[in-house]
Length: 528
Ligand SMILES: Nc1ncnc2c1ncn2[C@@H]1O[C@H](COP(=O)(O)OP(=O)(O)OP(=O)(O)O)[C@@H](O)[C@H]1O
Picture (cartoon, rainbow, N blue to C red):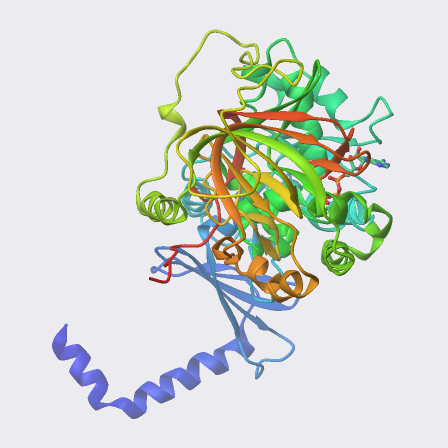
C-alpha cells in the first residue's frame, strides 16, 4: 500500500489530470443517484448535485449547482444532533425516495433544509441501511417523533408568536415527524389561558408541553399543572420553551444568550432535549398559594418590568429604559424582609459555585420517588402566620449567621431568583444553580450615578461583587411592603402589592434541555 502511495506522489501530474477528469465528468453526469464503496452518496435535487459523506460526528453535505459547474461547492458538516429525519420510502410506481431533513448552520440563523431525491438506482436495502444508521445516530438517546402540545401566544413578545410558529417552528416539527396538538392561548381572563388547558388536558398523550411564548406562559403552565389533583406526576411532563416573548429568561438559561435569538434552536431543543429537574417556589399571599419558577421582584426591578408593560412593543429594551428611569428618579422603597439564610458569604458562595460547575450534573435518577402526587405542604406556612423574625437589623449587613434574619430598611430593590440570567442582557443571580435554594439580592437606595455606572455589571454578571449588593442563599423569605403602592412581580407577572412569602421545592418540575447544566459563567474568579 505504501508503495502505491509513493508511486502516486511520484506521478503527481497524473493526479492533477485525474482531478480534472472528475470535474469534466460533471458535464457527463446523468443525474442518477449513486453510492460509492466509501458510502459517499451522490444525489440530485432542484438542479443541484449533493454529495453526502457520513463522518464520525455528522454528515458532510457538499452542494454544487448544476447550472453553474464552475461555482464554488458549498460544504457543510451537519452534526447528527441537527439531523431531524432520515428515511426511505417506496412509491407505488416502484421508485425509491430518500428523505433527509436537517438544520443548516451555514448562515447565522439555523435554517431548515430538506432533501427529497429519487435514489431508485441504488440498491433499496443499501439505501435503507444508510438512512436507518443516520436516523439512529440522530436520535441516539431520544425517542423520535415526539408528541407535543404546543401553546402559541399570538400576543407574546412583539406579537410575533404566531408568525414564528407558522414560518419557522412548525415546519421544523413537521420535518422531524413530531405529532402536534396546537393551542392558541388567550389572556388570563379567557378559558383558553394556558393554565386552564394544562389543568385539564390528558398529559399521557404528550412527551412535552411546548410554549411558543415568553416566561409568562411557562408560569401559567406551571400554575396549571400544580393545581391538578395529580400535580406531582403532571409536573414531570417536561416543558420545552421556545423563545417568542420579550424576556425569555428560561430559554436564555437553557440555551445561552446567543442561541436564544434563534427560535429554530428552541425547536431543536424540544425535539432532542432531555428532561432536567426544575425547582419550583411556592408564593403565598394570605390563603392564596401560587407558584414561581424564575424570579420575584420588589422595588425598582418590579417597576421596570410591570411599569413598562405599555412599552411591550419595543421588545426587551423596555427593561433597560425602565431601569434608567427609576435610577434617575432615585426611587426608594421601605420594606421589611425576613429570610432564612443558609449562606451569605460571597467568597464561600463563589467557591461552592465553582465546585458545582466542575462536578457531574445531577441526574433525574437521583430523585426520590414518592407515591404522593399532591403538591408538598408548606414548610414555612403562609403570610397569615407569624414568621420567625430571628435577628432584627435596622440596616443591611453581611455576612450573617445561618438562620432567620429580618431587615427593616429602605431598598432600591429586592430580587429573588433561581437562574443566572434574568434576560439575555442581564445576569443578576450570577451564583444561582437551581440547587434547592433561592438566591436573594437586596440593594439599598443608590445614587443615580452609582446605578447607571454599574448597569454593565448586571450585563456581564459582576454586579454581585458590588459592596452594596447583598447576596443571600435562602430557604424561604417574606417581604412586607411598608408603602401604599407599587409593584410586585412574580415571574414577570404582577400580583397585589401586599406581603408575600416564598419557599423553594427542589426538583419538582422538568424542563427539556440539550445541556445537563443551566447556563451561567463557567468559572468565577474573585479579586483577592
Ligand atoms: N391571545 C392573547 N391575548 C392577549 N394576551 C394573551 C394572549 N395569550 C396569552 N396572553 C397573555 O400574555 C402574557 C405574556 O405572555 P408571554 O409569556 O408569552 O410573553 P411575554 O410576557 O412577552 O414574555 P416575557 O415573559 O418573556 O417577557 C401572559 O400572561 C398571557 O396571559
